[in-house]
Image 1 (tube, rainbow, N blue to C red):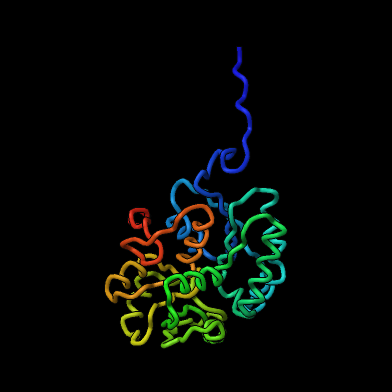
Image 2 (cartoon, rainbow, N blue to C red):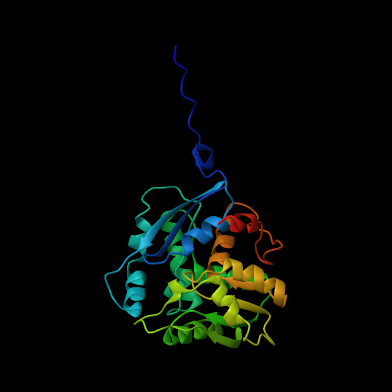
Length: 261
């Protein structure tokens, strides 16, 4: 005689996987970094479902514009999945609007979808505010025109940018963010003057950041934020506490996963 199936429950109790949180992630099609870093940062009892921001445009400016115009469509690609929250791992998508405009748009999306939608830039803002950081040194892997937009975005939001380290963009038409390594970031950072900065921001979800965060926080004794670190922190806060640790003053507990990555 077969046993009856257990009754279905609602919410996380009905899930086969992701008892600690079920999160969606949108990231540009060519980004090889955001997904593995989020999987390292998020605890093993969470699940991460990933979709890609896609565009046939060749230029970075045009791709960012298309991502912005089609954001609702990309979010809808998750269908009726009951996510706890969805993260948009493309910081550059936010630089063309004000924080207020972005917050209004995200509130409308959350109301329509039934779960929070959090951009990487919004997550960085929240993280910097939670740590009381009002002045930042900026490390940018972007081409110079996008670095300028990035700097203005943070200055419009009330942050003082004390110094900018422009990483080499290379000879490619756009940039070489996806060719960078944590060690190249650490090596370049050695020449950055952080005097007057209350924190350091490693911009961009495509630049590897986790080993740099551990190394720089230990060496300089300054909080280090990255787009992916802040996005994971913000996602976790929708379901559980996200506490600091030895590896990060913002959000820790992931060093052992990084060591085996």
